[in-house]
Amino acid sequence: MSEMIDLLLSRRSVVAGSMTQDGPNKDEVETILAAGHRVPDHGKLGPWRFILFEGDARAAFGVVLQEAFAKANPEESAERASLETLRFVRVPTVVAVISRVTDHIKIPIWEQQLAAGAVCQNMLVAATALGYASQWLTEWYAYDENVAAALGLGEGERVAGFIYLGGKDAHPTERVRPDLNERISRWSPS
Image (cartoon, rainbow, N blue to C red; front, side, top):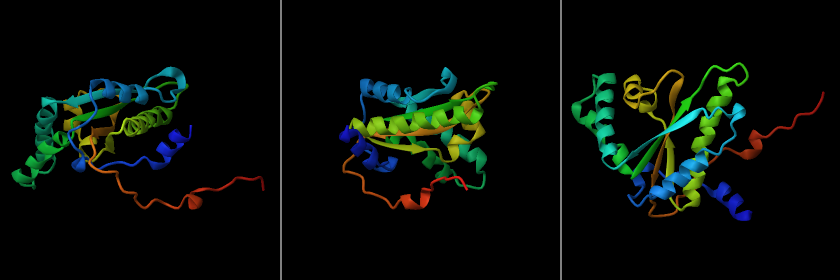
């Protein structure tokens, strides 16, 4: 059990640009998705879905990103827009986690969105447990309407995050975190 606690206390994102192409194989990606799928889910709604980008699909989606960026930023140069084609080819696998909420009389939308966030976190932990690097990104393309259309997002759907999965050359360094004690309070009756 202490291994799991150690994993949770040391898990660290790795910047996608520094990942290697030695990422998880098909079975390991399935394991990462299965771990993501095991989150608390009030009402058993499963308010999420996955879109995988592997192989040639990564470069093809880069063209979608380039075109969406150019449309949203007409003042930017074509050279700058072309950099967007590189986003998904930095790693062997990118998983778009799609939050898919439905109006439900019993289950608030907020809880459904939190479940999709928990999916992303479980995937990061699973990737780390398997020895891979991972990063949860949103950035501009998670919120762009042209990208949403290219992803085929429907009513009540939005990108919760893009989970980048790859290899790592070195153990990621620790970063400064907020002081835990400043985040803790204890309620007591007045």
